[in-house]
Length: 458
Image (tube, rainbow, N blue to C red; front, top):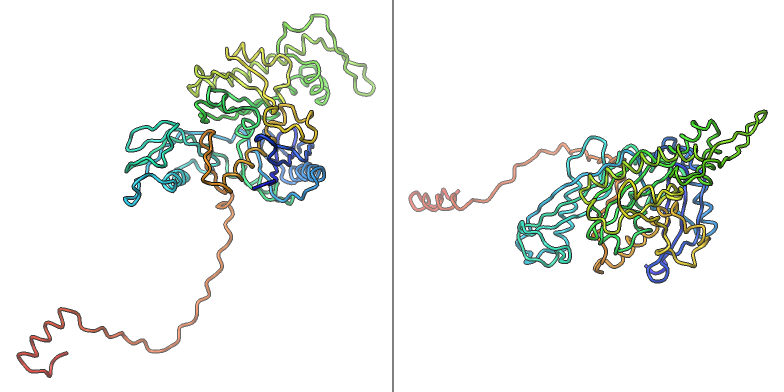
């Protein structure tokens, strides 16, 4: 897999970004090309207009391909949206008698059987994360893999992530319309975690919170394993809309105000600071107090972080997050959001940027060192790891047990079966095949032959 090139496509609500990368030094990812464009046809992380979304995808991919000087034909795609759900599951299989010890094919069969779990209509499994393995009903330590353990029964707890089939189909249509194939679909917080977390974070316990434009994505890790995932339908665009309506200004101006002058803490802003906003033609400029702006941002940011805190407590791991909360995504650039998060979650918080996993020789290195690009860079890292597993399946993976994925589009649009051509039967007379005498008939024949002579052997 030397020098294999992976392409990640982040289809977001506010932007569509494409990243072309390869493995760098010390396990980092080296970005060879990067393209970004305004997202059209996408709402809350869901493709609503296939043609508009495809046009945005095409622009971002072409820009990245030109910069990297490569041809792009398949991509790893991030997925989010309110339709994403998660649920626990448990499965069990009997180990075949010919297996003296549990083998890898037994583990694979157990995980594969989870794809047959009964789901709500219109749902499709996109990830399955093993949580705990049991051999003959006894739990085994995470440090001891099930392969090589002796036993007759293999059981495991799983964390399953599902998505709406129709929304998956729209993503497929948009990518195909842009002239590309989907290599795999990855839940966006899983990809973001690849870029901003390290092994120590995942072992200690951490909540990764990706505040994007349309959704806020949450992934909670503990003991090296992903334990909880959630997607909230509130994010940065909700704050922008509040400023747009509350200050009676254009959306473009509201977004600029949020990024340049906004604060999540009202007490951190001076009473007398005023911002002058150019008015539309024939109208005078508008003056907005920064205290007013901070109050609007604080109210919505507080609501988002309170829902994040609720999800953390719902997971049952809120008292085990030694590494605290890591905020990433475009919303993480809001001033004082770290302090507000610590007030609401009562947990240490930091801003997650892909500095640890991004190779210094990457193009646009300084620009990419931003939380809003965590998902795209994480998609490239995810694709590289999957490619390395395929090339070296026996290599030990020191990180958390990975999700098992399948081609989620394989069963959506099955190709029509070719009709089997039947050859017409010839009107020959069917003859009944004559069978030879069985054991019983032979004994009976011998008896009659001894009594009546050899003329009635048959």
